Amino acid sequence: AAAPGIVKPLPEQYFTVRGTNAEARFDAFGDTGFLTPADRFFVRNHTTTPVLDAQDWRLTLWGDGLHGRSPVHFTYGHLRDLPSVTRTALVECAGNARSLYATQQGQAVSGTAWTLGAVGAARWRGVRLGEVLRRAGLAHDAVDLMPRGLDAPYVSGGTDHGRVRRPLPVAKALDDVILAYEMNGEPLPYDHGHPVRLIVPDWVGIASVKWLGDIEVSTRPLTSPWSTDWYRLLGEAHPPGGSAPLTRQTLKSGYQLPFGATLEAGRVHRLTGRAWSAHAPVRSVDVSTDGGATWRPARLHDGPRRGAWVRWSAPWRPERTGPVTLLSRTTDAAGNVQPDRAVHNTQGYLFDAIVRHPVAIA
Ligand code: MTE
Ligand code: MO
Image (cartoon, rainbow, N blue to C red; front, top):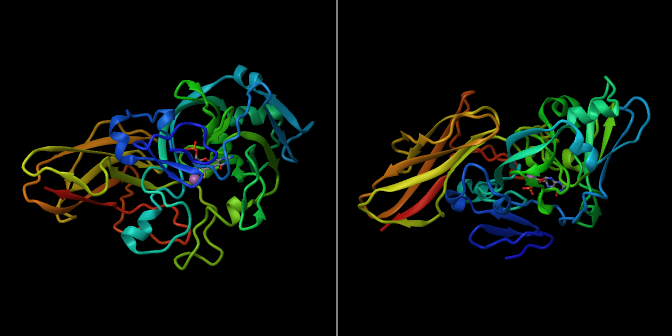
């Protein structure tokens, strides 16, 4: 399969194309390890992947939040010469699992109809954004940044919204944000932000701006359509005008099994899945193989880690034939538990409910 504007191949057994986006098939994650290989990582593009040359690239920092001369430029070579950090982080779209608002809760939402596969885990290597900001002369009264991508301006409904950009508070930038130039030990692939992208751990994917071109540094709060019109919670359950711009993702879990899969009765199946939380490490995962009547703990195969997921498994021997709903429920170390229902919002962000996974026993 091919998606308009995505460079890498998208084999049908690993991806579902959704417009200019490619969802990774969560049910196929059983044959990937802890990290998601770059060729199996979902792609979310507002427009199209630009093919940029690292040698021609430079990052520009500008704005009243820098003291001294502005703009300040960093070439790719300069960034690579600065002290580097490497960390594992998930990138997860704010709308991951959005389609379940409709299929599981009967609620209408707008946006890309992801199931569970708009998430991936990778080892990112790069330079701390804080390091670059300090070298550029960050003023002590700077409050907001506006990282902006080099992909084409985003036009929708006849309106040109400009290039993808979204305010990032200086406090978060100085905490753990990375200017990443490697993914899983290789230069960033074109589709994932080559040559340099932001990685904003635990926050909704839109914060991790790809193909980074420039960053405004401001002593006043900044806004863009990606913070005012989208990526906030709108609808009846929320204040007029919506919530504050989204920051953290939430928690989820799922089975690495196609929806509607058929399992043989009378033999032991090893059910597997993944669970993650943007709030705290996963503490436990419980599974139900009888539609939620009874629960038992799954076995966790990875240690608790901030900003990553755990793989889990549970053996199950179905006896009776017929339809069954499998469920999984994550609890994190901060005490967050997946609820039975997600709180509706019109754009379908932050789905956190227990996923109801239908299978057939034959
Ligand atoms: N950055 C730019 N410049 N343009 C984009 O369209 N999409 C964002 C974010 N960064 C986007 C972007 C969204 S909505 C998500 S979920 C993540 O990138 C997806 O990252 P990935 O494509 O590497 O999986
Ligand atoms: Mo996203």
